[in-house]
Length: 298
Figure 1 (tube, helix red, strand yellow):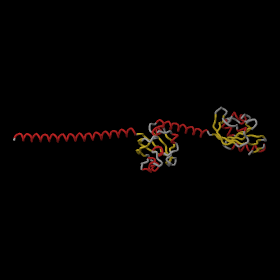
Figure 2 (cartoon, rainbow, N blue to C red):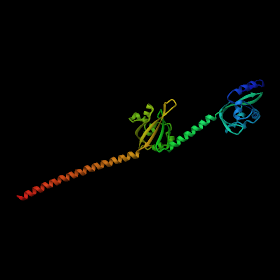
Figure 3 (cartoon, helix red, strand yellow):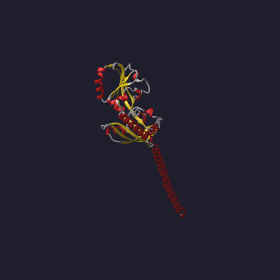
Figure 4 (cartoon, rainbow, N blue to C red):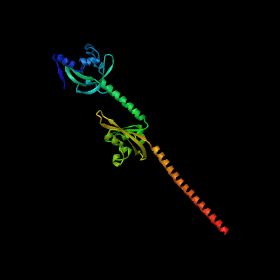
């Protein structure tokens, strides 16, 4: 839909445009010259109206890297898109803009409206940086770390956990934790296991348990599991972080030591039994000698 703004109505419209806190540029669709700019747009660009109007729009608003230039595509309304506004110093300002065709002073134009998204873009960049640091910390940990949502689905797994279960993060994404750790179609707490994640969801605090997990080849992996709550701004537990320490080596060593102790106990019992039997034999021999001595005296 095209709006036809006549010369008579332009003065009133300019007053309205200058009152809004949205950047507005009116661009001639044939020459690509800026024919109108409101105060908000001029403030972002950093120039006076006579320094901006009459200039080619590409000097201030970068065209999309892919696709058509919106000025030459007046057959349809333009969806919101991210672009960059270039001020008079050459600084690039991220903007979110939309565009639509308009008749301005009897000539076909494009009216572009945009807002400065520098602050949210910085926040987004800071969030990505924070996530990258968080991921780096997780990947640097020797322990397995996995994030589980309220449906017990894995949303994140570090390299340590992948090594424990012998699977990739892509293979685990979106699957239930009990499918991966226990090779089961049912939650572990339904099969008699003590589930630290379930207790964390119920109490909002951390819990520690000992579990026997299975890797991709169905081999037993003994782990110490500590779960911690992840809460939203309202304090509701939305996910749980599990830190899983592989103690298979320790458990195996303890089992070996118990086996050795049992062998020693059995050997000791056998040795003591033999010693007692030797004592008994010595006593029997002594008795026989005494009887033999009495027999000789007769």
